[in-house]
Length: 448
Image 1 (cartoon, rainbow, N blue to C red):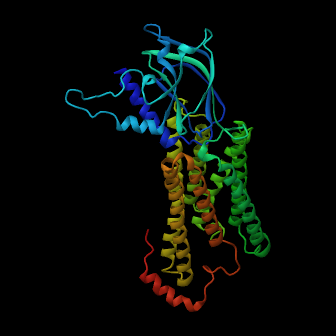
Image 2 (image 1 turned 90 degrees about the horizontal axis):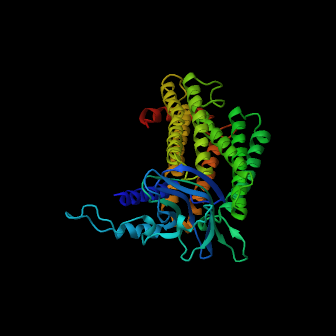
Image 3 (image 1 turned 180 degrees about the horizontal axis):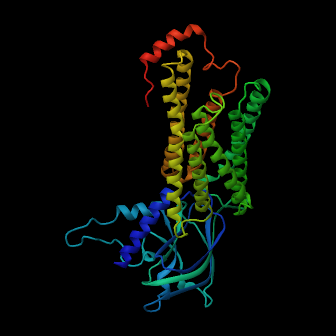
């Protein structure tokens, strides 16, 4: 029963890892465990090339039990590839009346034919220390686990993990095979945002400075934050790739991730309310949306930092992932309310203000913005998420590139549609269009 439970937990952890764990970088990490009773601990997930290796150093390791002295061969480290996991699932014998809970490999998971055992506590010296590097003979995406099959036992140890691929020149590459192009992707989009910012500042501060509103300057701040985010992400991934440590760039990365996330959702919400370019003030309910969205974004980024800087070996790591996903979805829903309120308000005002063409243009603009925002949020939260999980580990960079391309396209749409202009095509229409627009408003229902 204990062995079956251990394998069930192992499969659960692998399922969680496949969905939640981002195999972007295997930084050199050192973690401490004190009286840990978990039967399985997932450390990292990494895509290896034919020249890959994993190095593990354990110190101060000891196992305690309330029962008999733990068998050291029942505690150890192993690798499990996705391919082996699938084989284990498909080759599991079907249940029968005589054997309703079949086990294809009874005993400890360390003795399973589907795992690659590295070493056990039986290999430790008298001080509980062991340090060895294991070459990868079959390139694949592997998960590094620690298994504790000793009943009613706890483990205390310090673990240093080092997973990498060796380049032809002998240097180490600490990025997973499929994430090697990521630093270049972020660097390319950082340059794109620099060009974008220069063009936008020319439009807002020089050519149409008299028509620019406060929202346009906030949008300039969004471009600056996004540019700095891409720069810090490129540097973070570059240093991890070459040295196994971000050298402080992870702090800048999470800082600008927070800033650009807060400004982005604030800009979407404020554009949805029509603040600055349609009205100079915010209603109480619109202020409440901002009061909800901004703290939620802060909470989501704190959860993202905890998830990114620790790992699945942290107790409660799955909980932090759930917090991040829940808060992010809540923010995505909250920012849509101002757009809906603006559309309803315009629809009601069209019956009394006598400006049918202008109202129709505003409704069209907000309706397009509403659809594009939903499409952008759906793509970056669902499609990109799916790409991370279903794409072969050699092409994980595709999800990063897809997210950056979608973000750039969304920014270009939003900035173009709400650019400052003396005669905006949506808000300054000829009087001849009033009659046609009034008829269109009567016939066309702008319902969600």
